[in-house]
Image (cartoon, rainbow, N blue to C red; front, side):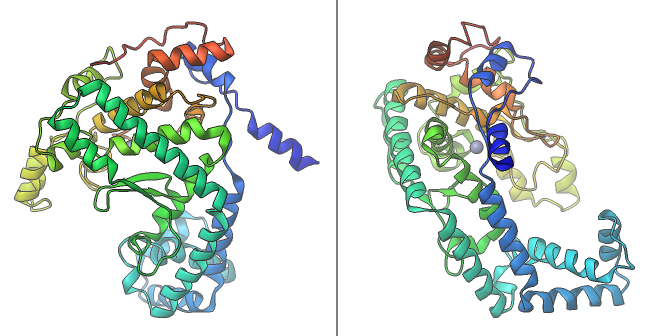
Length: 395
Ligand SMILES: [Zn+2]
């Protein structure tokens, strides 16, 4: 019974910390809760991995080597976690979990792991995948993706007309597919196993696919279908955002006026990338000259390690993808119930993040889109024409 009430309690969200009136009203009218079963399954998988004798053996060996060398890595790790060195059993247990997270599952190193561990990761993760990506969820994902794709093309037709740029974008969008992982060995999951456990939706330009990580399954319920379509449309937009446009496309970017509107502070004021350290990084050989030239030629592109942590990343393309996704759900005529209700939960952003706050995403983009504003105030009467305080960017 307790669990029932807990579930009921966590389902209703009434955030009160947002200051924007339109957002406050909107968030009172929608709900969102994360699916705990996803995280329980991941935690169980990691614990099983850490306890497996193949992993425990290499993790323990690594730990004793580091201790023998009096490595600062291990002493600072113990300090950070406030572990008791007089409790070696607990230290070893925590270390194995850490080892699984940061070594076994880390990006780009799968092929360096012993074959037995590769096989173990493959079989255990495949099981997690088959437990969580159920037939119903996959079918809802596909259905939502198909709507997003169809209406993305319709929005483009409407906004930019059937010119050469439209044809070029359409051609790329038509080839996008969604990727839901099934196994590890021999698939793209090998490159970054942990990403698939932690991430939601991500556009992968190399394969022209939308990767669906386990976090994305939080939305794979009919009650969140509007969000699902919006999230898919957001990823589709990344296939022709300003960074990709400067890299992939022959035609002129047809969205430059929208993008300069999104930069404006009367709209959400997308911040520009901070290149103030670039010359220094080149002088000190931290960034190669050709890489720097490429960065300068593509001023809205961020790299995983550039700008350096804490320095401002360019925000235009995340905002543009939100803006496009709002246009898609507005046009598609789908039921907007709980649209992007997860944004009602505050999210901590790192300094210089390429994202703006969740509150601003809702107020400045989604609730400012006229059709969305009308529909969301219509069926609940709560938004009641409250002004979001942001300019709507349109062609
Ligand atoms: Zn994005």
